[in-house]
Image 1 (cartoon, one colour):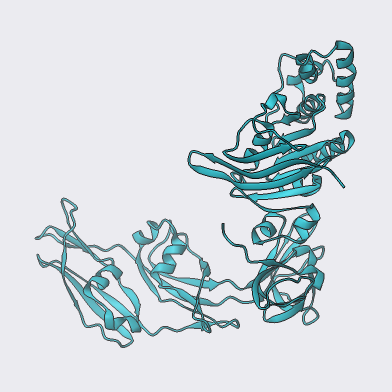
Image 2: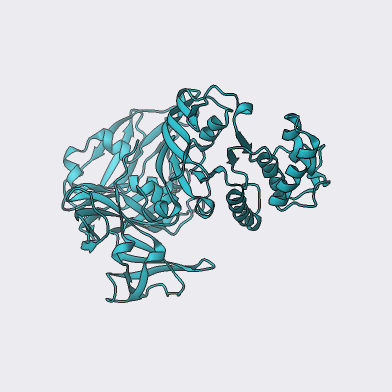
Length: 524
């Protein structure tokens, strides 16, 4: 069994009042290639720098080969680091850059030369001893930095995103080279990256981090095939994540069906997340797979086609957006201007309608023509009844200025889908300027239309996932436009070597081994 080399115990680190590491516990073993993986700001580089001795944790302990090293300065730790910027000495050639640390240690010259030459041979730079480092390529400079770190024979090599500055082709080559070097020198490498493919390609173990926590720690196969939660599943590769219920051991329910699976240990009827990788799904003829659907899109990705199959439609509702010109009413005698916009409302809301609400819904305003100061609307004249129809509404000021609009009282018509999701919305009346001034048009359209979706069985609210329209808000003119609000249906992403046509009626198939059940993620 491999020997435990590094231990992090309850590591906490805070910067300017923000906790970036929140009680990290982690064991790393001898001769492992371990990758700290996560988005920017997750704490991976901070953890690396604490191990290297460049930062000190606020709480917790760091052990190296059983010895607490928190108070040991960086230069006394048997740990070397390759940084994102290689920090080579521009005035020294390749040989002298690699030999620098050995010379500082006062090592005899007859021992330095063979050690440096061996390291250069190891990193593929034999014959480059006299080269000017400033004339080397990015990949060659990186190899010099690695050789300079390894020549000191550290117990651990830390690599802080050293491949990020390289182009894609060279980056892939260096991934293989780093793994080969690690295996040849037989020491522990700890590598920091935010690139998932890089982590899967190079690592013996992967530490997936987010917001100062470790979300999962395991081999690339474990991380990919058995993600611990939705975050890991989404971060490592493409995933289809579906809400499900664990009926009992080895049986999970989703998409209105029970499926055999290989997972166990959950509570009966526990809500879970189900993940199925796109490459594990096979597209078959209609009725020949587990779930019928329709091809929504098919994109060629170079080595495969990415096909989206919709197995359940979302509920949708289409309304009309009436766009009118900004026609302010002016009362020159009173030196006043007024503005208001017609609107649609639910018949059920009429009974409790107040003047203030009518003013707000109509965005009714009055102001002094010269000073632009607001003027109060003192009277709202209307005969709105709890009956479907159009009703005139007039707004007046104390000086007698007035503007008339109409209110369309409507009976809500609920659209539903096969998942018993209801959605309703009302027609919208807005001016050209109001549309152009919107900072988030989709959000505003939902608000203006009073668009709402819910589960007809549980009455729980359902998110409106998509707002579709065919106009440019910045170029809109007077007229009528269709707006469609849609809830999320069920779409599966499939990776296939065969193309499909949009609109094809198909089915999707997968095995019980392709279904991975996860606990619902608890937000920390």
